[in-house]
Amino acid sequence: MSFAGRGVVVTRPKDLAEPLARLIEARGGRAILFPVIEIEPLPAPAALARLAQFDIAVFVSPSAVRVALPAVGAWPRRVRAAAIGSGTRRELERGGVPDVLAPVEGADSEALLALPAMHEVAGKRVLIVRGEGGRPLLAESLAARGASVEYAQCYRRAKSGRDPAPLAGRWKSGEVDAATAYSAQGVDNLLAIFGADLVAATPLFVPHERVASHALQLGIRQAIVAGPGDGEMIERLVAYFHERT
Image (cartoon, rainbow, N blue to C red; front, side, top):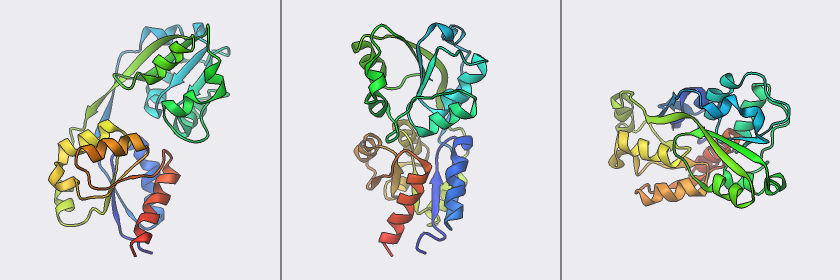
């Protein structure tokens, strides 16, 4: 198989990267873990202590779930949990949260906003659990539909402080055949850490067209949209190298 032995840089935080790394290894590739983003928890936002006052709590990432859920305790029955995508939904379910609303396809604000339940929010209180910064689309769209929206910012994303020299050496020696990035910030950090001269010619696999466009604007020559799930990512990686046999 042409994917056998291919080195793939997985840039997600380590705990989120391991499922994809296992899939890469199971298909004969070599997973090279180098998180370009580190998740730094912030003090628990006051809004989490008032969670029972909301109608809907939207979690924007698995990291938001992992950081915020311990501060919540028992999940309030009246609050409907919503997730940006299937990975975040699974993280909520693992934490014991029932009846999570999430899109079947897609893993972004647009996919969640397209669900019928997210059109019926007039007069409801919505809490968006996320990291610092991020896109305003979700909050703005829900507010335009009549919801009262608050943020609970529970972590920040920092550039990795790991020593890049060992991986840079492997990159230069031809051991890296592809890389992955799951957000625009991930692309930014990858380029900041390793430099465009090293990264630009490497096929970069991303979950969304939005991230691909950002990568191309920064000089990445090939930004390949795989899909938001680990299964979609590995299938696109394997297909890409098979197509080039």
